[in-house]
Image (cartoon, rainbow, N blue to C red; front, side):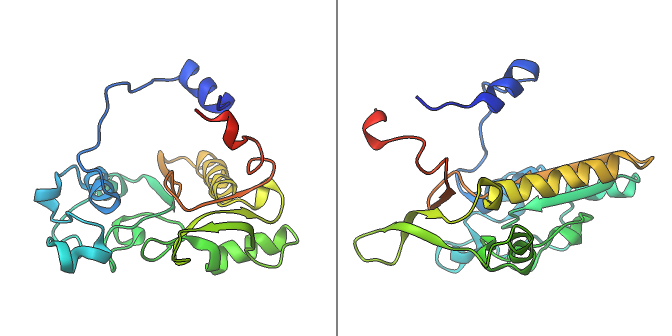
Length: 205
């Protein structure tokens, strides 16, 4: 039912990890595992950092915890981290050698100055949602249609930054590593047309 031509092309021309699994099913611990190569019980971030006081574990990576990006930086690589970070409340990508915008906390960038400037370049006055659906209490957003063209979407915004970083780094003489981190795939969904209207509920099993 769902059409994914770009993912299909990447899968056909690249490598598919069909037996990969995450060491943690929660955002912050999983991201810390990727960056450090350590299990959650080793790096200490066992819950999303906003809830650590209630669930235990550490709030931030310890100062002596190294990320693989520091090894690349020390070897002379150019590094960019684009999009969501969500590893502690004081650790930032720049602390580990990355360039790029930092989005604090869960970090959804609808009010971030860098994203708002991007929307202005597209002729839009801020981030606006129509046709919103909330939970029965009205406090949790399930989805909304973002006003503007497809280019205004946050995935497109991150892809735009990633392409710019690839072009900038590939013109240099140094090796590079770029990490692009989208928000999602969980709710809330903030999607512009034509994607918002692409699939009708009746067509989904």
